[in-house]
Length: 247
Image (cartoon, rainbow, N blue to C red; front, side):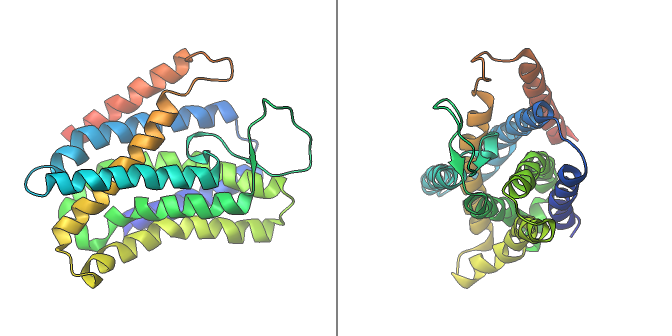
């Protein structure tokens, strides 16, 4: 329940912050860089070794590929908000170099689906994997904060009332907890061994994380240079993920 509460309130608190204060976009980009480095390190050092440890390895490889393409579809919907892109549709003119404008409602649908998959490993059915869950939680939360801030900012910029904006942000906030509550039950309902179903979920997440993290890490800034601050934050993210495995 602690993990589920953290997943929920991280989004809600982020929405309140952007409503009350001006949030520095450079800090959000660095948070995304940290989360991308952290998640890809957890994927390579913890998730992949733990799920590819026996039979059905080739089957799980297909689920990694499916996860990668799921994220590709989600990014088509969101315009890449998971790694710092995405701007609400408005009437202001913009030049050809401006980012593609997208509907904040399409963004909400896409990132809520993304969050649902992220929440599935935290199901109570998978309590035997608590250590991996703990390592994963930090990366997901740090990843969700800038996305929630961007989403709330887009709603407000689009002229949505605060009451409606908070109502919509709640959809995103409950998506990961909903994934956690339904994760184990989905496996039971389709008659798959719960441990193998956990591996399927994690394989899907590996594919999703690979797409998101590589987009964040290898993306250059607006001047097309790899910022030294971003490099330092990426190294810190990798270090934190390695340390979390040792604790």
